[in-house]
Length: 398
Image 1 (cartoon, rainbow, N blue to C red):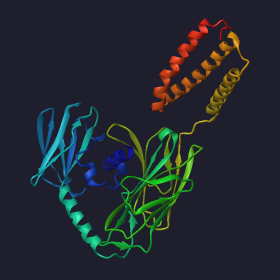
Image 2 (cartoon, rainbow, N blue to C red; image 1 turned 135 degrees about the vertical axis):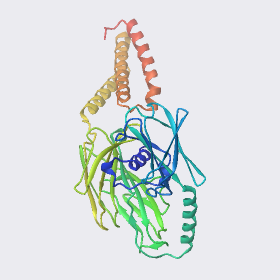
Image 3 (cartoon, rainbow, N blue to C red; image 1 turned 90 degrees about the vertical axis):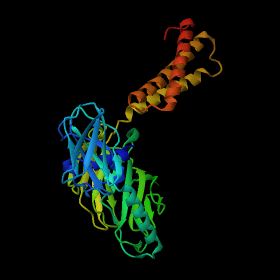
Image 4 (cartoon, rainbow, N blue to C red; image 1 turned 180 degrees about the horizontal axis):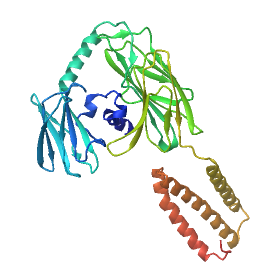
């Protein structure tokens, strides 16, 4: 899933994008991502307590690679470094923090560059403490206050089948210790042209979507309220301008997409635009910028969109329709005899060949459907039968 891959990519972003905030520590705990800036055969393991940046110094870390165990101690940044590991070897990292056993996911040492891992201690205690605090805050009456769209919020683009899908992964942050009433619902109107908007799994039940409007009712609990919405942005040219007005302050702007062809994000509000890669080498485009005040607007252009000419498609459809109509005419009463039968076979053959060509075209473009996979052998079988009849038909060769 692209959104999960982006969460990991953002967590281990290259130095040029280091200002991006870290996601929930539980999302990146024990995960390994390639680090091209590290020497080949090098792995760093960072150990933190509950949150990124709360480094544990002097902690012993063990890395086991192909059955061989190596040990190192974390430095002032909470990182233990292991060098000279054999490429292609399978490994795992472990640490014991105050009796809590931490263990990474299994990893493979890359043949080029290194790996970075994070082990997070105290996640269980932090979750219990947060649950208790939320219960206490929920029992208290709300007070007048404000919320912001937090720095971990993201705008993510996907392009399935040359369509543009946009996902708003928003964190509505209440920095007070109690619930707050902002004086009414939080309303976000999506960019002009947005279609098919709907809440995503994981979004708060306080958020509803009607047309192109997101409405989040209060009061807002202390901490984070997740609002996740997806919608489609139709486009007919290689460039599309987007404008999004925000009703409350945005702490930081982050926009991301899988890198496809010449795709680019352009905005004077972006202070950084660059590429990073996921653990499987997939490139992602990341853009970030400073915060936006309440009532401010994010203005950006998405360029290099995958636009294809519609002329070949309409020509193919026109040809298929003409062949179908010709076949229907041949089937009308009065068209009898071997010559007419031969002509109908030729017309049916051409329709099937056109259909098979469209199936193969979708397959080469990576857009083959389950229906295509079922239909292909049937089309081929019918074509074989038609060619057999044409060989026996006394009509003119076609």
